[in-house]
Length: 444
Image 1: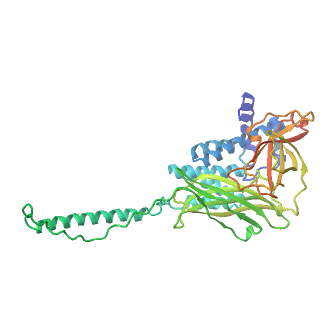
Image 2 (image 1 turned 60 degrees about the vertical axis):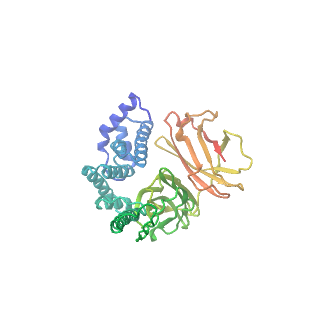
């Protein structure tokens, strides 16, 4: 997000007064938030701009962390936390970034910073399992890098093979010395020297390349009753760089309870059951709509893993529920096609809910596959329009929503998928808003 001089002045003013906000793990209430805003002379549009800057820094920080750049992640997340010190999600992401940088550099300052953030989170949320898991990792002795399967056996075979060759050479030399002078030309050749010893067995073949299925074990306890997870379709790609593609269906089967958030740790293990890769993941968070009883959401992610990984373990750690008997009804929503509409696809789009918060438009969208074919690829652009059908804001990459893609399970016939879309609109834009249209850009 680009900032002009006016934005820089706004952020400087906010940073000068943000210290008056409560330094808590959970954000202050809306009254406290607006009290500081009024003191600064800010408007809802200004607050939305500050929130957008925080979200930009936080998103970049998390992406840097995912791609193995903890130093850049710490820098971005520190800026996000300075602007919003009450944001618990930003504080935990910063703790994970410090822990990752400690693992990479060994600087004790990073470990202490991560510890302090995790313990502060637990003071306000004693049930926050990811913070306990982080403290356990920080206090654990340095783990030895796991050896590739069969490496020790190959080294043993090489040593044994070298000893056998040395014995054969010595036997031949001794036999030659004891056989006496060579016979004259034309005489009988000396008898062959007997050779003793076993041939070394062939080396263990290397791990085959290509894509193989990845078994996913789910670990949970009674607290997570009513949550079904299906990891079918997860795979390991043993190419030049080993990677894992995790695909999960999360289904809420608990009557009378909606599911708002679900956090977990994903572990990749080798043949001996040792953890070779560990990733914290959020299957559901504020960027996803609520899962009502009987509904499911899909989750897909690809990341680099240790070549020795052979199976996965998903450890459920945190969740948030709310009372909900049934999902609210969806209303039809405007749909347009940026491409020829495939005749074999039958898709039903709906709007479940719409609300405004501090200049940000939040929309819960539904898509049902009513056709007879599975959908492998479905992407649409979200356009916010005036009553005259004129766009309120320009298209951006952030306005695209992906319902089906290669890293997700196929969108099966009869299945319902959900999407939450958020758009920051200023005070001048909000009165002009009339309706939203979805423009299909990819469908297969």
